[in-house]
Image 1 (cartoon, rainbow, N blue to C red):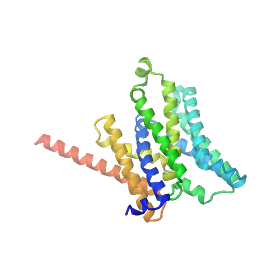
Image 2: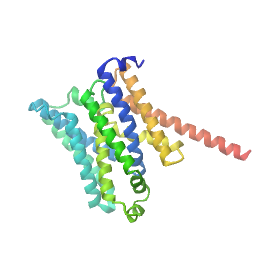
Image 3: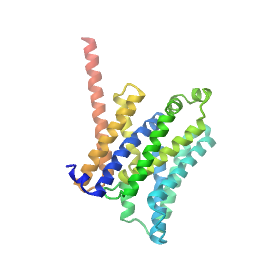
Image 4: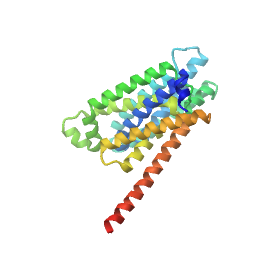
Length: 284
């Protein structure tokens, strides 16, 4: 079943990219969920859609081939993440306001650029829901670079990110530069979201950052174990989703998300069964 994914270059690109995204999205998603910023992925994905629509507009209508949708989407996502951090500092008592503000701006930009580009087309559809054939070799190298950057930053600032995620006040008192770490983290999230859109799609990318984590939380016994299980579930979702999406000839984003939901339901069920068994054993 996997033979074709190692035979054709475009499927190799998709498969290897999927493995990378299945690793870094849940990895960062664990910190995102713990910090109660789950909706930030939705906000930045819509900003990314605005960048993608802008890139398609420049490429198709004005012939500016060097402004590709992938890189313009990434640029918009990073800028959007900076605005999120800025708004969070402006509305200190209502920091969650930053997310709907940026999400609304992203949707507005998307509508404008899509209209200027004469509406939806096949390329934009693949960005919305993901595509098995949309990933180029250059995209693969770019996503590999993002993966290495994410790994480097997580390893370098793991202690700081951990402390800020669970007790920000204590972290600040301990001498951690919270603003700097927040800025680096939010930019990483933006890069991962924009990279994941090729496989999962704009409308579903937040699921890959949150669903594996939600499943992991049910069975893990510590933060590092949560990260480990999240990555395992993320990889399983991507591999099964890509293969089924290819053979059923449907966008992989939907199959990846439905696989993640299935894994979540299984972990919830197993946890309930285990808890019931444990209580019953304790009574006996």
